[in-house]
View 1 (cartoon, rainbow, N blue to C red):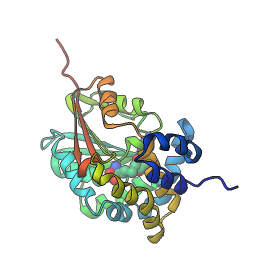
View 2 (view 1 turned 30 degrees about the horizontal axis):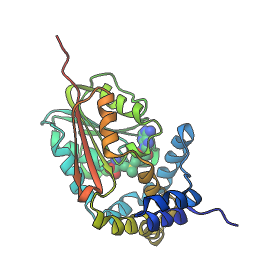
View 3 (view 1 turned 60 degrees about the vertical axis):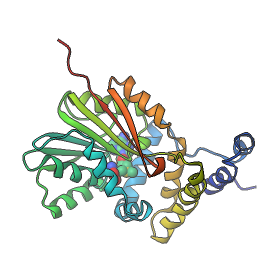
View 4 (view 1 turned 60 degrees about the horizontal axis):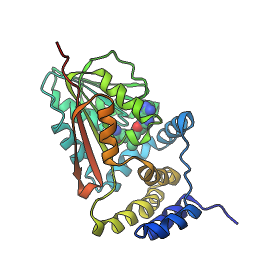
Length: 274
Ligand SMILES: C[S@@+](CC[C@H](N)C(=O)[O-])C[C@H]1O[C@@H](n2cnc3c(N)ncnc32)[C@H](O)[C@@H]1O
């Protein structure tokens, strides 16, 4: 007998997703979690993104139906950033969030993008130079141990990154550490649609269709099986808000986009007392 593949497990979940009690029993037979944890997850995720780097932008546009730029723009509008400010984008990938931040802070401001995948960072650098954005720079580094001093930035953003980090509380506390008091942490992340009517079409698209789309565009299909699985295993929007609060952020709130398929979390670092 063959072990169930990730597609089989997700299809099983999709079919049984509406009936929690039956799904509980049946899913246990089928569902496997093939995302490793801890240091193994870190190595796995780094390898995965380094492999898909050349196709990342194309597939991002296809799979989000080109909406990803508007989502980042909306997230940046909630950053509280002003011209001349300094911002950090964690898990920056090929740089699109950092570019949006750079437009916001202008030539007198500064933006740093950090990611642990060298191929992603290299693409971000090439795109910055093509765009002529001199206020943005990119470097390799780990979200769970940011190479910056405390209170260095006016805002820290992370786009579609927290789901991938091996130690989420550590990454959130690192982002909180490096922003100045009064600054904001803004997280844009894939979430689960809230509308029961749209749940089935969303699951079909996300769990079943996206790996096929990846194959169609000759991207590594297994990487796009990881995508829905990572969303499935990620904590809920309410739990993420609680993580923000645990790290010391205040006024934590979240905004759903696309019926909750995408969610933006925002938290503010308290001003120093006294
Ligand atoms: C889905 S991509 C998102 C890229 C970009 N933020 C965007 O909006 O398109 C996730 C990125 O997170 C990076 N990443 C995952 N875990 C990381 C970590 N612990 N430290 C630094 N980068 C990490 C990956 O290398 C990858 O480039």
